[in-house]
Image 1: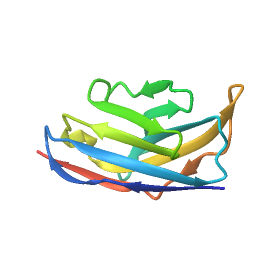
Image 2 (image 1 turned 180 degrees about the vertical axis):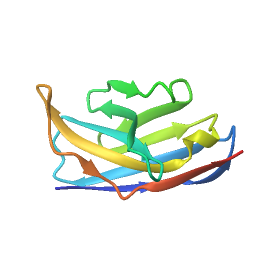
Image 3 (image 1 turned 90 degrees about the vertical axis):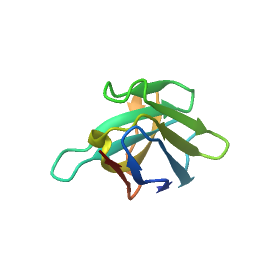
Image 4 (image 1 turned 180 degrees about the horizontal axis):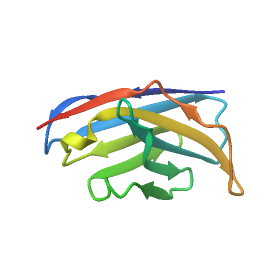
Amino acid sequence: QVQLVESGGGLVQAGGSLRLSCAASGSIFSFNVMGWYRQIPGKQREFVAQMSSGGGTNYADSVKGRFTISRDNTKNTVALQMNSLKPEDTAVYYCNFYASASSIRGTDYWGKGTLVTVSS
């Protein structure tokens, strides 16, 4: 089992910045991927960004150039620096973790979510 705790959400004006953080604890497999998804009420959860324990990153097209993901493997933490925020970035952001080895994806674990609200 892996537990994820997010922090850093809040209210910000369009064009502003926020930083989300997530700490993982429990049975942490060395080879893993940590990332962020977001969900607007009534819509499906969507991928935002992820980073592997080896340093590889992936971003949704909608956030490329504005969001930056980083992680500290020694502390099992991941952060999402969000700049140039837009009202359409408003959502509940969820931290995600899964073990990964030989292209096999393990069980997904999720945090409880943190609300990001961007006002126009």
